[in-house]
Length: 425
Image 1 (spheres, rainbow, N blue to C red):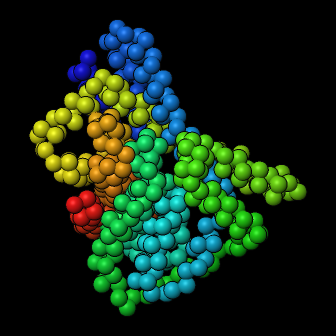
Image 2: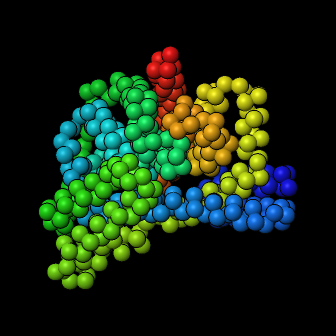
Image 3: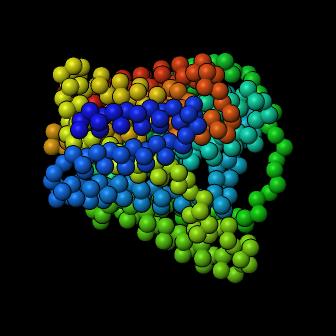
């Protein structure tokens, strides 16, 4: 059984990593892998009662993450439908290229902590297309946006799906992950920025002509922007206050936003109202990504229940020995393969009884898995999004951004390790 499970998982994992070369959507590979793995596992075990309990546990764990992601993604779509992000982007006034890079990078960094790194990348790269006339400058800025989005997403329970998985799974707390990873994430972005700024001193840029004014009235735009972001920011407080899972907080917030939208637009004609509703936003969220998360979480759960991940953890401990080195290697691996299954596997490899909440292992995994994907353009959802919008070439990114991202990754990792040992002497 073990050989069959590992073989199927490796083949499906390879298909996910080679998605663009094979031209097969990774969601299809994840679903196929999940179905095959559970089929093999079911046929190999004779304890059907235990199998039912394990499947029920997997469904419950996966549903918590999926419900949360669907709610958060819908809220972001509602804000975007009301042109809410223009409140941020309209404040950019500088004409110096270096200053613009720092503004874009830090707006991305903090925005991705509130929203998520994928959505923020899409928003900011689309903004760059409206700001910069030079294609060369746009490509470079888009690469820095990927680094900033992943760095910003790593230290927030809302900013990256892997950190969200660890938060919902109980491996980290919202306040704990923010306090632990914020300095390392800042360094992860700050080091590359300082390096590239030297070459931008004195350079200016030509902006593109302004587009047509947004049709959304300022009052509606400001209200939905503030309400949507407020809901996302308060979800960790909801969990802390009620001790209920985060997905209930996000669903409650979505209901509030939905009701507010219905009241706000009740007097409009259907043709003007429909695009602004939560119902319309639900049709625009990336369901392909949601299905991918379902498939990969179900696939990894099979290896966990079959005790294969525990065996892998024991082998790594015996072969490598040092936790920090193991986690750094996992982060580098996330630049090649998707970080979601890597973190899902790590959650199955190590237990909370051995590594309690907010321990070194979980926090460092959140940092390394969240930021290691910046090293290659295909290593993160943010990178793939930027690649699609700006047609960024894999080799170009590796030459111009990959080295900077690697330096930032290692610098941030060193900061976190040093910070941890200083605080736990």
